[in-house]
Amino acid sequence: MNEPATIAWDEGSGCIRYIDQTQLPGHFSVVECRTVDRLATAIRRLEIRGAPALGVAGAFGVALAAVICTKKDRAAFFSDIRRSGDLLASTRPTAINLSWGINRVLAAMEGADSVTGAQTVAVAEALAIAHEDDACCHAIGDYGAALLQASCTVLTHCNAGALASTAWGTALGVIRSAVGQGKDVRVIACETRPLLQGARLTAWELARDGIDVTVVTDSMAAHLMRAGEIDCVVVGADRITSDEVFNKIGTYMHAVCARHHGIPFYVAAPLSTFDSDHMGQDIIIEERARDEVATCGARTTVPDGVKVKNPAFDATPMGLVTAIITERGVLRPPIDMKGLNIHRPTT
Ligand code: MRU
Image 1: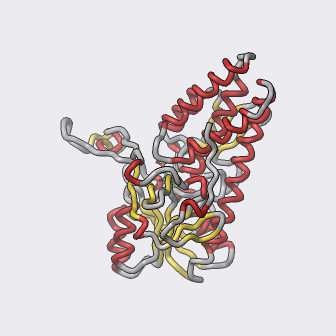
Image 2: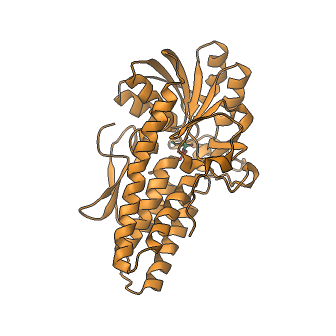
Image 3: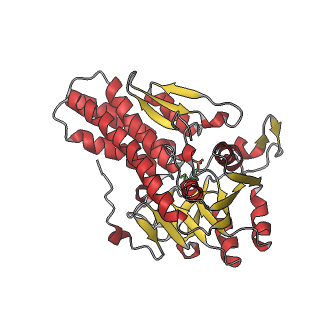
């Protein structure tokens, strides 16, 4: 995708610049964010979304908090920054990358011997996280591309692309890399009710790259699999425990259908999405507002007083996953979390 990046640090003015994803595909607007409160609102509203992008947003958020903090006393300074980190971490509980990005910058800052030094370290560490995200996504793309046939149709769900990371994407990174290698890849993008990340965002960014994409409603996936129109499923992840993969609501349904039809089900995610400290049953699934389900544009689609559920994510048992594509290579379940030796910063 062309510049500007999904999310970036503006060195000149010391603010965060990001594409407001709630406006796509109708309007392309870039927001300059100068306060942590505004960033927290942007994350809650899904102006910034997608696990790797949330990791970068959390990291930039702590850097922003550090740069704008006027406290000179070390204890008071760190107390302010931790409060900002806690606020940002509370915005979306399921995607582990958010707290990972926050904690990594906080941990780096603790080594600094002055407030000014901590501010400098915060920006440098956040920029390193953004830079690494791009490298990780390209590595995931290259490992994943090898799994795709020379000519194939890939079903994906939600948006695990450039808009969900800094530039290349995870699931869509696999597709971009395969297309870059000359493979003939067609993409079926499930619209992803209720917020339509597939229809609005995946279709938008793939079409801009000239990649063949067709949007379907989520309920059409099983029909297409049965008709032999899908060769594999590739999705992203918000959190991976040793027993389950958490991703956008609807992912589990695709995994069940894929298994029934003998279709490979691949998850593409960086190691920062892995959670070796918890099992699936411990994970909080974010429940979002009623209106996201009960309205369509300005129209009410569910009668007043009727109950609505709106879990933003679901969990796919690891037994349904063919492979997880990471920046270190392709992992086949069962996943040996300890063997991966993932370092998670704690503060
Ligand atoms: O609620 P969202 O839009 O943040 O959900 C995003 C997803 O579920 C993505 O598939 C996931 O974050 C992986 S992005 C590389």
